[in-house]
Image (tube, rainbow, N blue to C red):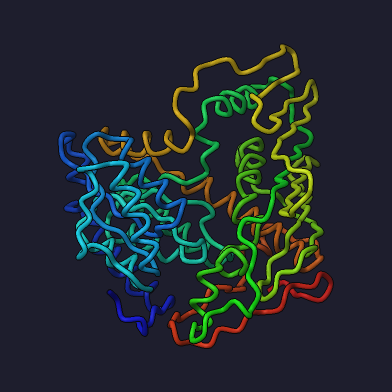
Length: 433
């Protein structure tokens, strides 16, 4: 078990891992061995972040390749590891080879997993930690499944860009958790859109209307003696530095589909409205945001996000073109009304979450690395840009958002630290920095 007083310094880590990356980029690294055609070799997987999504990712990794074993688990909290380990052992008897010595608890658990002799790491901790975890995994020459979003602030996005570049240089597979990109029906849908099925795109509308994910408990529920950092990490979704807000953490899937429709072209600017309807106690995220993105050639995209109880729920996408329309409404299959009517009728034998891992491990075996870094960064930055516009009430350009120096993630993390929660943003008064 790790020292709970351990200091994790973001700035110092970035410096040291950059130096390590220069050494590890030499040819004699792990990926060279895996890409050498030794396809019968067992691939060892480590999971960082043992919540529901992380446990799901580990399950899918074990299903993706018959010669994959799970050998290490890491999380800030021991009970998360215990719950994940028990479920995975039950689902995959004989293939979960995690000994007590390979269960790492604490703020440095990610580094311990990476150093434990694994070949592939699954990054599923709260998004605020993602840039540092990704950078460490790439520096160590590991293949990576990286859940979305990739960061909660622009400095984090810029770090992820550098990690993505280094992953390409090292021929490491880096698969992003934007799962719709791996779903058969939507792949064909957007391929047809890009081929001109509805002419030129003039507008896109997406919505992500859902219920609350993890409501913030009142301060009275905070256990005696629990420090600020632990309280916030245990309720991570409710704090901007950890989740990025609902638009960035959850509705980023719909932002990603807007980006997909626009061939991953970055928007020029964004204007948004948003706020908080339901009480949030100590948290500081909004529960609804509506963003208008402007793209080149006067094209607009509209993104509505809401997470409220007892309200209409819908996750849909609508595209308007010069010679037709296209839509994906809820769980229904994609439909195009254009020069030719089309509805997806092809095979869909594997769910999209599983497909991500199937393709990740196949790429490692084939020596043909996948690298999703360019599009995963663009979609994450689009969501952060929309949040910035909503929080400030200002029109925000891509350059302003991307070059922002607002660093939400603290430089140092210590279980005993005092970590005040910034007040909820007030449009018209909160500043863009």
